[in-house]
Amino acid sequence: MSVTQVRSDIRNIAIIAHVDHGKTTLVDGMLKQAHVFRNAEAAGERILDSNAIERERGITILAKNTAVTWGGVKINIVDTPGHADFGGEVERVLNMVDGALLLIDAVEGPMPQTRFVLRKALAMGLRVIVVVNKVDRANARPAEALNETFDLFIELGASDEQAEFPVVYAIGLTGRAGYAPDALQNDLTPLFETILKEVPAPQIDPDAPAKLLVTTLEYDDYKGQIGVGRLRSGTMRKGMTVTRITPRGEQSTGKIQYLFTYHNLSRQEVEEVTAGDILAFAGLETVGISDTIADPADPTPLPPISVEEPTVRMTFGVNTSPFSGREGKTGWGTSRRIRQRLYDETRSNVALRVADTDQPDQFVVSGRGELHLGILIETMRREGYEFQVSKPEVIYRQDPDTGELLEPVEEVHIEVADALTGTVVELLGARRGQMIDMRSESGTTYLKYLVPTRGLLGFRQQFMTATSGMGQIHSLFHGYAPMMGPIPGRQFGSLVAWETGVATSYGLDNAQLRGTLFIGPQTEVYEGMVVGEHIRPEDLAVNVAKAKHVTNVRRSFAEEGIRLTPPRVMSLDDCIEFLAEDELLEVTPLSLRIRKRVLSNEDRQKEQKRREKLMAS
Image (cartoon, rainbow, N blue to C red; front, top):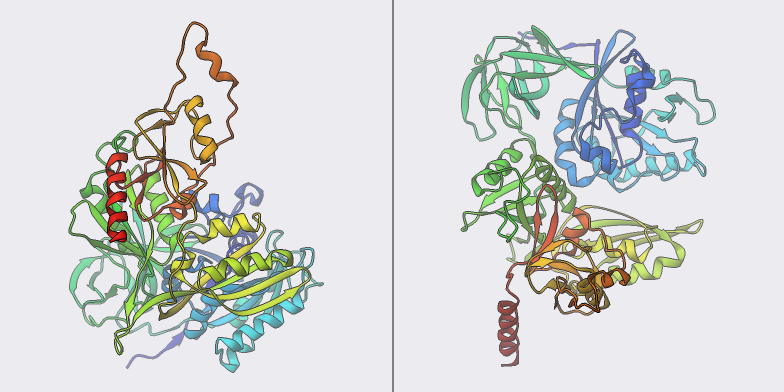
């Protein structure tokens, strides 16, 4: 009969927090103080944010594993994303740990995304250590932040034991921690001591057959697909035969050819791993998230990971613009290649869904939000793919009992200066938002709303403009509710190129009187390409490639006297938010072009007249 033992030489923890509350920076400090680097100064900042997009946006997208040794105990650390759109990552990695560090900003207190991740951690019964970070900031209020955190624990249904959480105060940037905000030590020793004391050591059954649930996938050019997970029982050895059980119950056998554990910032190849540790393995032909890897002597699956369903979808398709094939990698714009890439993504990105359509060159991709899908588009673009995407749309459901149509609703938290509160209330009112809380503190108003997801598509840009970039908006999925009524679409139409050619200063000078331009002189355009935003609600075709007639009196350099307003630079997120129902976004490694679905101006005008006739009759 097997006996459960406590493995006291290991602790497994996740670091959870709101976006930008300093998770990755604190891990930097832990790595440096555990002497991972010979020269801590040369290590740089945000070491774990290795992905280029993560570094640019300053957010963690992919959960990452690392490990440090402190006082003879190995601490496996998982850095998790803070944004609710990447909740699929969070839900998976919490399966691997016994405790969590919850980072709270000493000025802002617990924020919306904190609530999302903490709810998951408490539901799994994890031991949570609260770290009040950035206590050196101006206006820091550690006592109030701690009280708000306690209230949040109670609100989320924490048990009595979970609500009596240990607290550490820290400055992640300088790597200091202490048990009181005004008595910090010169290093993170109090944090390490609290982890060893409070986070329970893994309880294991070393004599039972080996069993592991795959929670993360990595890829190596030489070793192939690598599965990552925590060994629940037994011992896994290099070269042993294992059974892979999918969540659907399908079974296949294979051999573990490579076995790794994490130490510091690297994977270390080992001969065997005992239960309780987090490991990576390779050698099986295919591995998927939620697969159970088990000893063939006991091929019973572990409970699969449950991930919330997607709420937003977009159509990805082959680029059909006149400029297709110019800028992507050769052959990387075909439907076969795009389809393969999208389906490969679903293997590691568990919150993503991909479905074929009745058109072989179009695929419906569903995710947790605009940001979730936007990161996928940006990643594919950087890999060299060329494709086009449609405007995001929400995924509706039917009530199984009443047959009523339900739509996804987001809980929206907003911080804005008192003077701009009226503007924001008006904007959200038009988008069917329902205010559920409002409070004002020292010149800042905090608003809490329930808003239909379709009301938030394209809203961020409008919000930033209305608050002059000073407002903060965060949202997380609340649930499904009955339809909340019509929501107004985009206020202004598009300026559309009249013909194919190269934009001239003369043509742009005439067009800029009609709205805001997205392009500058010498930009190649094609008929049906959107070149700007109109000042009226309807679309307008403009000839931006029009050249000034040159005579011996009017010489060609007469264009030099024209003064153009600099064009609006559109990021990927801006383009996705700008899209109208009848528009597509052409994505290539070098360019982002918004275009009409129907490129011919004549055909669009005919369609418009046909619609007007139908409405009149």
